Amino acid sequence: MSRRLPSAAAARRRRRTRTLIWVAALAIITISLIYFEQTALLYILATLGVTVLLIVVAMADLAGTEKTAAQTPVPADDAAAIGSGMAAASTPTVASQKRTGQRR
Image (tube, rainbow, N blue to C red):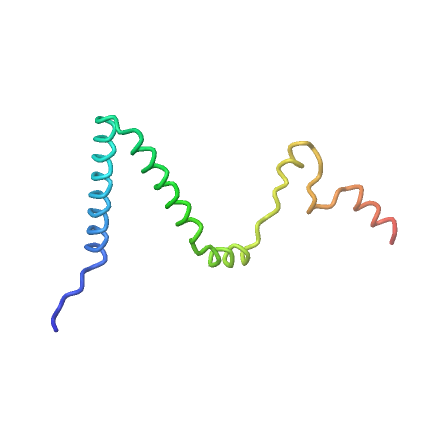
């Protein structure tokens, strides 16, 4: 019952090592397929890789990020209006302020 749990740093190091092993293995396979001129097999593997990537992106849970993005208001981008000399939509112009003053 005195089993020690691995620390977060050890788990991170183990994941990093496992990732580097995967990258090295895939690089060796790809280089060997190029060396032995197996381009047909490379095309098939590339197509399957892109398909898997698209499936992972399609299955990703993006609903959680929409909630946080909707809660923080994004300021209006009036860069085009500022660059062209037009007044920004959120700020009233001087002429409109004079008109509202005349109505009173």
